[in-house]
Image (cartoon, rainbow, N blue to C red; front, side, top):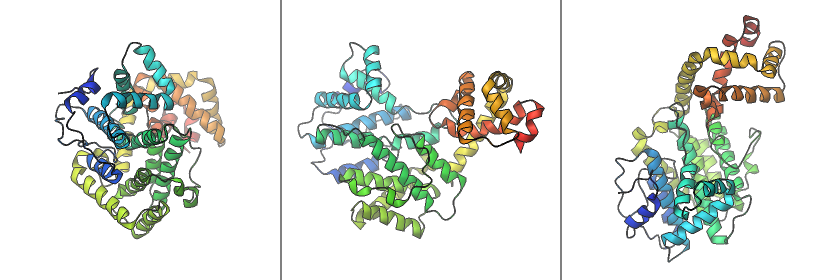
Length: 398
């Protein structure tokens, strides 16, 4: 029995499952639909692409995700290489990550100068699925971060097929994913602030793309015709499904939006129907186990829980936080200015940056620096009037 948190787990995984891997016989659609069933596409792994499932009762969720990620990468490798073996696969994945994150691999080489490719790959996978470990955001932000892991699988497939990876491949796929999420939520008639929060959760989970704003994006801005691989098309369609599922129902205009996505991707209508039925089946079957989908409005619940927990932390660290803010000269000047006039966009960025710098000095508040943590910063800003001298209070509260 492997332990995905100990050194050597990758080699042991392949040794124990030599005859357990599924041969998809070149059928990419079957491979992808299998990914849906495992939950990997939706960011919540419940089983693996294996003939016989593994006993995961003693594994943490991160450990299950690590094995699911490795197994999915090997499945795509096997689709492209008929005589796939673990040694060549590990070497190929290692070289792939050497292209897309050379800085991390150089660091890992220094850590493990004599390590094998498999031991170094274990560190890479740890990094790729590293979730937000604090109780405030973990159960919600990690499902989005892990759903975007399939972008690595798409990039690895492109690398295997073309013997190289276009420099902008990852950036383009990530960018289009966020654009699709944003447009999907725009189709909703009854929009809430929590829809915007979902977009921001996606934005905080990406690795290669930075947005100044996506508010003005139109459907025509997404050039879906450039996607020629079936796996890319199916995944982009499912990303739209995930965004629209947050309120558990598809309105007529939302179905029209999905049909437009499906058409632009040059997919048959039956593909869209299968996408809709698969996500409904998976989430309804595992809804009780998945915190993100375990509430009538998961994003609202996330924000409310985060608000309560962050508020407690701020109150506990009130004196230290007040002292740090007062000692930050430029931050105090900007806060003072904000009591008499609106800050410019650049000044607001400075306030945000310097508040995060303040949080770095207080261990309990480093949650604001974790993936998705900046989404919680408005909660801290609401407390500033209570932290500063009374001269600031009245204007700041206004």
